[in-house]
Length: 254
Length: 366
Image 1 (spheres, rainbow over the protein chains, first blue to last red):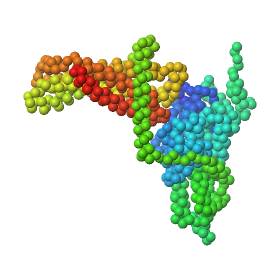
Image 2: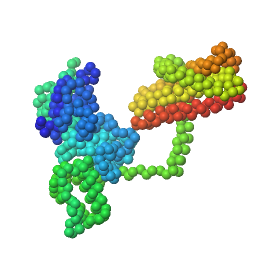
Image 3: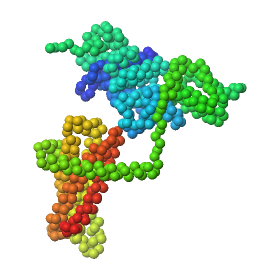
Image 4: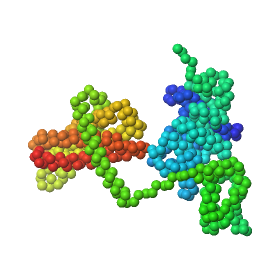
């Protein structure tokens, strides 16, 4: 197997009961790349991500992470795969009764033996990296939606996992914070070699960070384009992909 | 870890320095420095292959602790990628960070609790006023009330609660009769079991037990439903549409609770008497004796006073359940807290109201 492939999705079909969302899709994510899953609302981007992290079981096919099939792994093997992943959910999914510091400290507490002052220091550093140094001791309900999102990113990278999944990281952030976040993602990818799988439809952010995108189209229930964003914008054969990248509405019927 | 001739401590760190492998390094280095401080720490980091955020924090902390004592750290051959991260982390670290909030003392806590209690009573009084206005409006303009919702709640809080009410009522009659029959038999007065059980069931235990069941089942459910709606901002949506949450959500639930309580109480009374009848028959008395004894000892007033009480209990359970739901704060645990508070407040109010009824009935000789 190619050692540079960190995630491989093979002939996967995703369905909610009888409704097929994604039909027989296959792709690979290379080590250290920033990989973006792109598509319009409701095309199954988040669903695909949840299949990739083993939350949902595919109707057919398999998902390989670090050479292990997450769809069949159980018990300690599954735990091992999951401990190498960090996930940020769309709504943040922070624990409401914990402060931000406690939220980020939780995975460190559970998976390392570090002394308390080190745990606090590392958690505070992660939160400062996403610009939340002033809100360490607040609970999620006391901060804005954008801040919750950044705190969720800090929690996802608490253990610096080799693969980070981010579901709509820059949605709801102001342009400056969004640009800061993009810079942080680029730095982590470059310096630590972290692989990012990002679900997004923020074109400006995608242009800035993405090494490669795949584009999902609900009409074909699969991938309609793969490549660098600039190349797809300029010369994709699919008119819908070009419209998407150039923010054009569909042709007017009237 | 080597001590050099000039008193400096030389550390050679190789391989991966990550959150899961950092612990022994952290302990060794900082324990050694705490035991015997050195003027200078030299870190040979040339063979470091991986250094994640936790590792970066280790270097930052090492530098901070040494600098706090006026001592130096010299990191040599640090790979440039990790140096970038260290620079970034030190840059953000210099920004302001929040202090941990100080915990308040006993006196302050007590004062806060007292203020909260007074505020809570105040809120309840205001809520009663709001509810009364809404109920009066619902009676005056019945077409504006959402009866379909009310009927659904009647089904959930009433019909679905019937099995447990019947079971508890029956068992209560059975147990009460059996326990009182043993001492009464010593005086040859065991037929008076029928008097004892029927009177206590109809006047006290029937309404009270039914109310406690309703508080546990439906009071908590009302609080959780409305609480979840509040957390999801559905209440804000109602308010901005110009719909009053009290009229829309509370009136229907309170009306349903007032309606189902006397009906459930009737069933609890009936099955309690059946339970008592079973015990009396097993003591050797025919059923007709039990019936005559019951009819001679209880009057319509006993039954009606119990049913009146049960309606008031229904009002209390429904309204306090909804109030606790409306008071829900945000967060996952808030809905649980609201449900707990609904049950506790409901039961306290039931017991207080029951005491007041006892005094009132005594004075009007009912």
